[in-house]
Length: 266
Image (cartoon, rainbow, N blue to C red; front, top):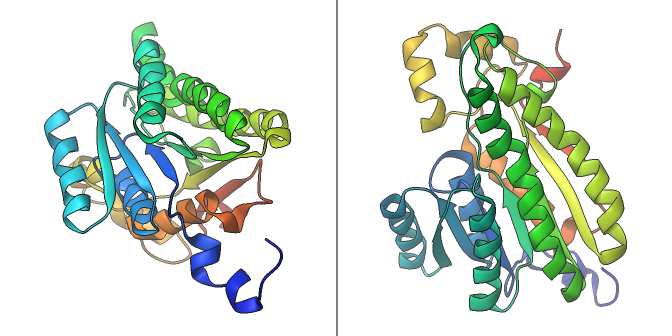
């Protein structure tokens, strides 16, 4: 980011503008994925939204386009290997490029470890870890030809601190830390940055059932968090925008923790 006046080089439009860029955001019909997709679209990117429910996905894409933003719906299951490769190829074919991947889709099975079946374990690892690698591999081939790109994984503070009943989820999210570091080293010479966001506890519809079934859960987490509250999805989306934007050109191999201070408190 050199040359030009200070106002040109350091303006928000120069640092964070994504006009002309194309992004694929998996698991983006709700929650944190939807918040991140909105942020990228608002910055000027064409965003390919992904989820397994075609109707919900189409509604989300329409919501963006009604506001004059650029979006497309891409319905597929990230745990399906052929679907991942086909989706990446489709984005490149339709838009001529693919500059940003946010691998956000995830699932979990909430059971004690000794009650988890091999099938439970395999399903979570396939969706939360293997799919991220598979998508990153596919997009990196296109990004390398184009001279660069951004790959961002949604990990979790559950790669550092855990609760009972999340053996597959925590293992997968921890695995993403290693995946980020290896890919960052291997892909840096191609101009591709690779980072992850580790969210703490955010108020989303995905955890609404847990908050409702355990009436003290929300308060317990808030009391453990130095900021004294849960995050809002927009507060996570801005971290994704930074990692997707020109502003983060020298940041790679990083885990950006956004958790209100929870993981540094004792």
